[in-house]
Image (cartoon, rainbow over all chains, first blue to last red; front, side, top):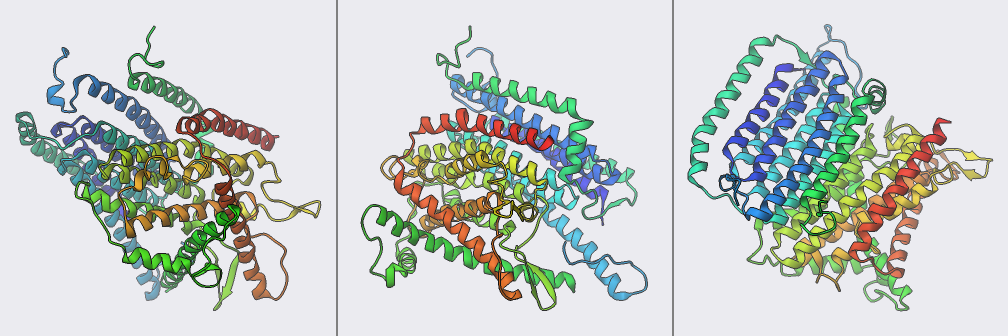
Length: 100
Length: 194
Length: 343
C-alpha cells in the first residue's frame, strides 16, 4: 500500500521539472519535450486519483490527454521544421524578431 | 500474480509476514520506477544535446508505464508505450535527426534563464509538495487498485464519452492536414496555398 | 513461499525460452542459406558438419574473432547502445507468447508461457513500436550519409506499416473478445463440420491474414520491403559502420523479430498449438508444442521462400503501398468484421 501522496508528489515533480525545462532551455525541441513531460506528470495524477476514487473516468481522460499531446506534437514539430527552414537556427534567443 | 492466495491478516505470523512482504514489494516497485522517472527528468534538464534529452524522456515514459501498471491501469500503460514512447517520441527523434540539432551553446540569455529558472523550479516544486502533504491524510492505494480492463474502458468510452471520442478523431484529422501543409516545401504540391 | 516458487519457475522458463530462441535464430540463418541456395540451384553450406549444420557455430566463432572496429567519427554512446536496444526489444516480445497448454509437474500446473498478461497482444505491439529506435539511432549515430538515409527510411517504413499491422489484428480481437494470447488461441479450438479446424483464417480473417503478413514483412525489413538494408542500394543501410559482434546483434534482432512474427501468425490465425492429439498424458502435454513448432517452421519457410523469389520495392512504391492500399484495406476488413460479429 503506497500512500496516494507519493504518486501525487512524483507527478508534481515531473510537472515542476517540465516547467523548469520550458523556462531554462534554449533549444526549441528541448522546450517541446518539457511540454510533453508536463503532460506526463498530469497523466500520472489522473491515474492515481482514478485508482483512489475508483472512477474509471480518470483513465479515460488520460486517453484524451494523450491524443491531444500527439496531435499537438505533430503540428508543433512541423512548425519547428518550418521555422528552421527560414531562420536556420533552433535557438529561441535568435528567433525573437518577426523580421527575418 | 498467478499463484498468490488471498490472505487475511489475523494472528497467523506467516500470513502477516507475507502481507508485509507484499506491501513493501509494492513500495519497492514504486520507488524503483520512481527513481527511473526522477533520474530521467533530471537528465533531460542536464544534458546539452537534444538527442540525449529525447532518450531520457523515453526512459521516463517507459517508467511511467510501469507506474500505471502498479495502479492497475493496464490498458493505459500499453497505450502509453505504443503511442507516447513508440510514436510521439519517434517523431521527436526524427526531427532531431533531420534538422541535425547540435549541442546547446551558452549565451547570455541561457545564463540568466538558469539563474532564475533553477531556483524557480525548486520553489514551485517545494510549494506543490507542501500543498499536497498538507491536505493528504493516510489514504493509500493498493497494488492494482482499479483494474482498467479494456472491456470496462471500452464500455465507458463508447457510451458515456462518445462525443469527446468523435471530436478527437476530427482533431487528429486537422492535425494531420496542418502538419502536412506546414512541413512541406514551398512550391511542392502540398505547399501551394490557393 | 508461493511468490518465491513463481519467481523461480519464471526465471527457469525465461532461460529455457531464451536458449531455444537464440538457437532458433542461428538455425534460421542456416535454413535461409540452404533454402535460398537450393532455389538458386546451388548447394548452400555443406562443408561444415553434415549438411552444413555446424555453419552457425562457425559463423559465431568468426564474429567473435573479428576485429570490433569503432570508427572515430561516430557518436559513441548511441553507437554502442543502438544494437543493444535492437536486441533487447526483439527478445522481449517472446515473453508473452504461449507455446502450449500447461504441463503438470511436481504437483503444480505450469503454463507453457513465461507470463500470461491480460494485454499480451498490446504489449507485443508496444515492443514492436519501440524497436524502431534501434534502427533510427544506429543510422544517425554512424555519422555517415548512407547510414542516416538508410536509418531514416527504415524507421519511416516501420512506423508506417505498424498501423496496418495493428489494424489487421483488431479483426482477430473482435472475434476473440480478449487481448490475452492464450484466450485468443483457446477460442480457436474445435472444428466446423468435424473436418475444418476452427482457426481464425477459416473463420473470416482471410484478408486480415494477408494484411498481417504483408505488414509484418515490412516491419521486419525483409524482402520485398528490405530497401533500407539492401547491399546493392545504400551500401548497407543503417548497419554500414558496424562490424563483428554489433553487426551480429542487428542480425540476431532481425531474425528474432522474424520468429516472433511467425509465432504471432500461428497464434492468431492458425490455431496456435491446436492439432490432433494422441498417446499417453505426457505426450498429450508435449504434442501441442510440436504442432506449434511445425506451424512456426512453415511460416519461416514462407519468409525465406518469398525472399528467394520476389524483387524488392522501390521506396516510394513501398510507402504508397502501405498508406494508400494496405491501410484502407485494413480499415475495410475491420468494418466488415465488426458488422459480421454484431449481426
